[in-house]
Length: 121
Image (cartoon, rainbow, N blue to C red):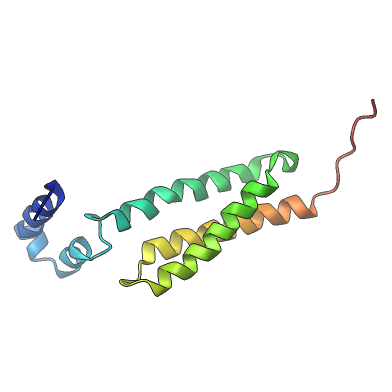
């Protein structure tokens, strides 16, 4: 095997505590487990959803409509994709469902907010 990660994974899985724990060893050896990019990419993607939640405190006029459309569309599209790939990536699915929900919430806020009057020049 090439690279550092496969050797590290083998050493971790050989540790007695992990080898004797069926659930933990199954998680660590899963094809979308923490020794793969298929785990870490969706894990870091949670930052986008969490920042979208923080933006719920932002004034509506500062919400970017194109950005929230992109966040929502990304969530919907990748949620579907995560269910048709092999192996099914539940981490990818959950982060994208959450991303779609936060995007929909922001779009709802933006589209239902009363219009703000513009300054006359």
